[in-house]
Image 1 (spheres, one colour):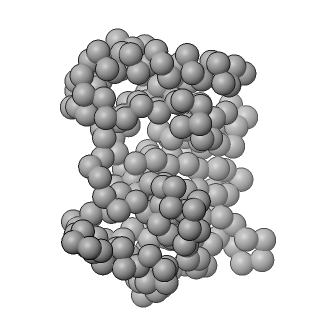
Image 2: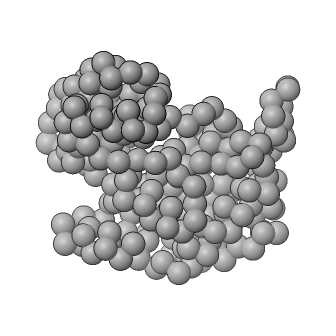
Length: 228
């Protein structure tokens, strides 16, 4: 983690790449999709074979916050030809829409199975310090803004109250035949994040969105960290 912070400081940037953010969260015991950087379509195809199809390709650039808006995300790629075409399409779209962006490469990750989309984040309040956010993720967080907030540190009881405090809690319990998610796992995840935040003052804000929640765990599919 310190190596990642030092590299960002040396490069005079405050925003970590998705790959760096996932490395840090993984070290903190938070389950993330395995993600690696590639710099050619041949390298992307080789890595996709190693990871196993289907895969997801994403642009890797600290200058592009919303990757989808840049045409920088391709999902459910099922073979080598699809990966190589997606690689070229991503770079062409980004070059057209964000010609001044510094592009590190294209990340390849395994495609997480569908689940209930969750968002978990943190911002620092000038008065209260770090505040954790929990809610329904994906486009739901933008449409419904159904989120709960709590100050750090959080124990399991505090995490439980956060989760149960959102209006969409019934969705987590299993709605219209959908499997309920593992609430206990989400509570533990929030506590892990709270402990990590309390011990890492270098971080100004972060978000994990989406986190796919299942009946037997959860996995972070996208992540972002901003340093002080």
